[in-house]
Each structure stands twice: as C-alpha cells, then as structure tokens.
Length: 196
Image (cartoon, rainbow, N blue to C red; front, side, top):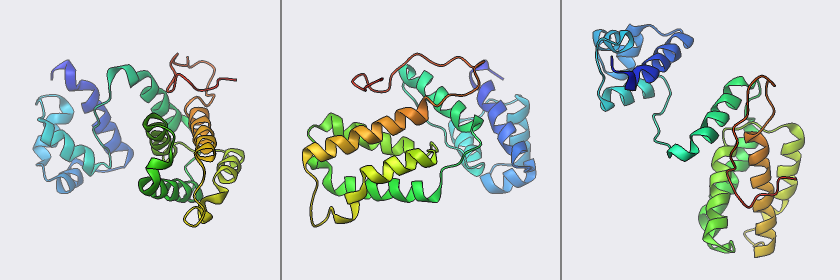
C-alpha cells in the first residue's frame, strides 16, 4: 500500500478492533465486502475515497480536510481528547446547543463578522472538549441571561464579553495540561487572545 494511506489504514483497523467489531460486521455496516475490508487493512489494496468514507462512517468516524497550518492545533485537540478520561457532560452539550441555536438567529448582534465567526468556532470545539466543573460554572454564569435573550437581547458589549469568556474556555480546554513528557505545540488559535 502507498505510504499516503497507511496511517488511515492503521487508524481504521485500530478503531474496528477497539470496538470489538469483526471484519464481517464492518462489512455489513459499511456495504463493502469483507474481502475488500481485509485487503484495505492488510495494505494490499489502495482504497478509493468512497470506500474510506464508508468504512470510517461505519466505525463512527469522519474523514475531514484540515488546513495544514491548523494541524498542530488539531493534533493537540485530538491528543487531549483521547488522553482525557473526562467526557463532555450532557449539561455542557445542552448549553452549547442552546448557544448555537441562539447564535444562528442573532449572528448580526456581534460587533464584527470576525468576532461572530470566532464565537461560532469556539462553540463547535466546546461541543467536543470537556470542561471542568469550575469551567462549567464560568460558562453558565457568562450565559445566565440566555433564557431572557428573546425578550431582552444583549448589547454588543455584553456579547463581546460572552464571546471572550467562551474563547477563553475553549483555549483552556485546548491547552489543558497533559503528561509533562508530551511537548505542547506552539500555536495560537486566536492571535488577539489574552494569554495572562
């Protein structure tokens, strides 16, 4: 198999084995033959993009294109998520979901399109990065007016404050300390963030 897909092949096999799924079961879920899956895993066949997508989705994975300059950030996030024993709580998912729904209706309330985009991207990451109980308290406090926003929309200044808190929580979750032996990537998701 070409070196280009070897890493993907290894990840697909590891995911299947971690789920204690046989090639036969993966075949049934993905619509590919067991022989095709076996050839992909052994590296005797270069899979097409459609086959990779079918197998990945059957394993509850997604294949995503990421800008090269963001790869250090993505690796850090993925390493943090896999190394963490914490999970995103249902309260966190619900709050992020409510904010995403509110944002979809009130995007124009932000001072700039850049601030709105950063807020949206921060929420997308917070859907997957677990927050501590203390961070969840901060998140809840920052968005306490959420229930009243329909009748009493927040000012641009208040939205900026909330966006800053959400961005700060996102950065904290992304940069969470892990094993000291693992070097941290030197990058910033937002150049204008406070790093105090």
